[in-house]
Amino acid sequence: MQIVVDLNRCEGYAQCVFLAPKVFELHGEEALLYAPAPPAEQAERVRQAAAACPVQAILVGEQAGADAGTGAGADVR
Image 1 (cartoon, rainbow, N blue to C red):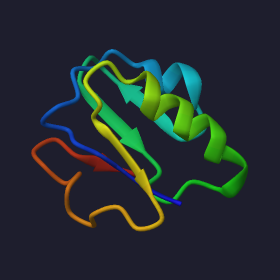
Image 2: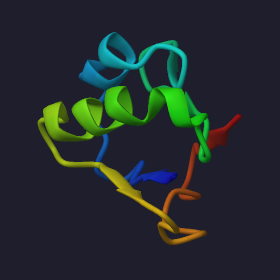
Image 3: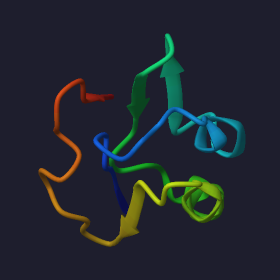
Image 4: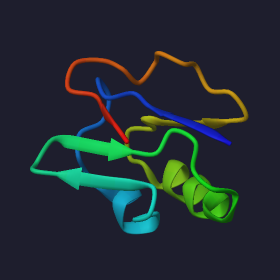
């Protein structure tokens, strides 16, 4: 599983952090850290987090776009 967060779209609602805290982490008010290739046991939580994102900023797939989540302020674990 691969995930990409569109950081231009993300508004820091932190639903992803609440639903998948082992994959997403919020630092400060705007800096989101995430694991682009989370472990398989986190797959369901990641899918729930993507579905819960109010601005649909989380893309989930087997191979999500490699540079879609590397905009300004991107922090990738």
